[in-house]
Image 1 (cartoon, one colour):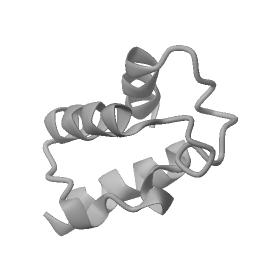
Image 2 (cartoon, rainbow, N blue to C red):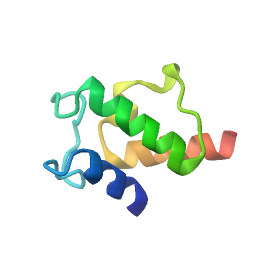
Image 3 (cartoon, rainbow, N blue to C red):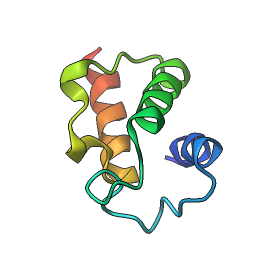
Amino acid sequence: MEKVLEILKGIRPDIDFEKETKLIDDKILDSFDIISIVSEFNDQFNIAIDVEDLEPDNFNTVSAMWKLITDKQSNG
């Protein structure tokens, strides 16, 4: 989870990712941010986040992103 926070803070250092719970719903992250995040997650965690995974619920919180990553890792 620390690596996720490191990646997110590298992309958007102005956001307190540990406190925000509606990163997508409140339009804190935009589509470019999501593209950057997905690219970094895919590279750093050796996973493939698909178009079907680009649901707001998967990116509203750090814990939701971590769950997406761990699900992808366990499902190959």
